[in-house]
Length: 332
Image 1 (cartoon, one colour):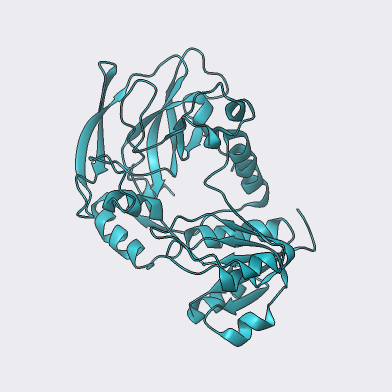
Image 2: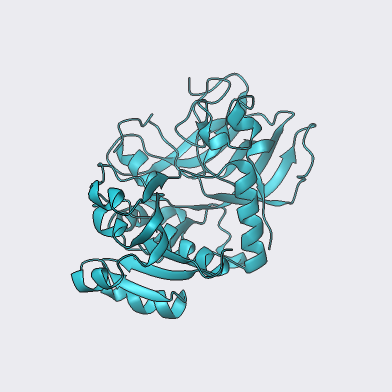
């Protein structure tokens, strides 16, 4: 079901209508602002590789038309009668989650991202049976629980960041804020200068250089892998100390290679993380405010969305495209 009788608010957005890889202007309707809802005028929406996967139906689960976007910022225009903590004029953000059951063990622990009934901000099925549409649109209605207010470690440990893109460059900033020694691991030698000088990474390793990789063997406590393309985890695991941890935060469209020997002989752990729960995400936002952690972006006007998506597909971005939904560039 695309909409219900309660969907009366007209919205202008941009949607992929099929797997051609293109988005086009799209008009649709959002639900009325309920008693627990907050309505937002969208100012900006980040472009994620996940958007590309859904637009192209790489995972075979896209429900067309799909309105992408789960990195949403804007200003509150209206709140429901049961909402406290947010008021018109507040700057807020919306992430990956639009709804969950609110009653399971995970939800009670503020781990909504692990709820069996979690609903994504787009390409999901909401409580009322309607399809969720994302932030490539001029307004959004969000349940109060899935909204974030926006604020204007482990020292001595070592972190490796695989891939210096939209996720990777922010991971470097977080690592430095936590007092970690940060090593960037990349296939591109051209990124070394920026990693060291702009992002203040402590080390840089070219993953295609066997000597450099061997020199870093068993040197890292943690590794965050942000690469969205298919690759082998074997060489990365060899960089971890005994008991080291590798966390995958990207979603390649094909399985990654996971050899057993680096795990067995290093007592290493591989895990994954989709996104945080609402409590964790707000804590992250607060930390960003405290340490002035921001994303390095390239602002994109709405008439250049398809051009930006094509560049994103070939990793031609430093480091995150953000769509200027509200035409606010002149106000920055």
